[in-house]
Length: 443
Image 1: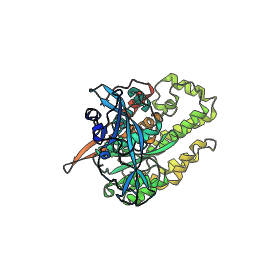
Image 2: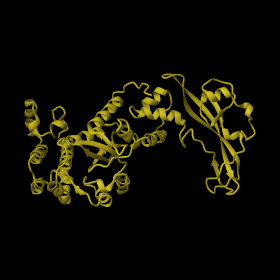
Image 3: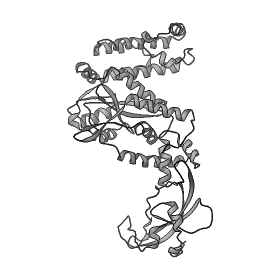
Image 4: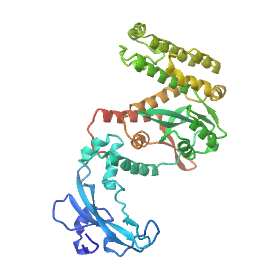
């Protein structure tokens, strides 16, 4: 196909209207109503595209490449057709750069994606709450893993453009949550004695922390609760030099629980107790089932390392319910035998982050009573989510339930997502995917 192969008389006005993509003109062609052959409106104009390398408009058509896109046409609110668009995209040569060849700009599809933006947005909206494969199957298009990132990022950018600015809290908390082989920081805020989620970050680098912290008012931050991550501590010192940096008992509790879970999974693989992860990490005073208590006591006798870890963990839980001191915590750590090496990270935490732990103990503790259980619920919700790329994980967890907002100086600002609404939404999405619920139209 060359530049003069078609004229304006070859354009089908009706099919162009049916397609409804402003920049495309559909050509007359024989065949079914599910196939459209199209050119850009510039095809029939003397418009000269500027060279992206040098900015020159001394460009000419070098070749034409036929690209195939999948698209969706809505016949009604719940009736649609999947169509094929064959787009003849021109590649232009710059006479100024000589060797510079570039494709003409298009804005109805993303680079490297074989779906139009219209279809990719529909697929992305479904993938917020269901599996990408399930949504793709519903619309009858290939579930290309190579395109899901581009599809989701475009929709995420759109949804983020609608968000109000963040209202900076006085108390900011950053926790690390495990998701398969990756660690992602979850940023929390405390409002009115409640825990809210502000965002989840892509990695634990200092740059990632600083980029997010720059969206907050540094002068308003009074306390930052941190996890034992040097890049986090460095970013906090850079962005919030006047804030009090503390490490809370929740962090100690979480690291102890993770250590205990590791031992349970290695030494208690056939431990005959239902929901053993919960039962063996719970404070024994909250075990109300006498039969379960008896089972634990009996089965522990044949697993001495697990029994030792269980007793040490119970001692820590009892300690954390008292008016404990740093010396109490350090004494507990000194009693952990070397054979329980799963507690090594916690022991290092207690040793290296003494200043932050003391700052928490010596300062005013304004964290909600349910803070520990709130963080545990958030971490468990992330842990239970099906495997997916970060963009999908963040979209499902942060951009689906909707943020709580507050009005300040006549403008709305977002406080975050209250933890119980966040976890309920994430658990529902996990159930949608794992139980293979039928995907339906949600427009």
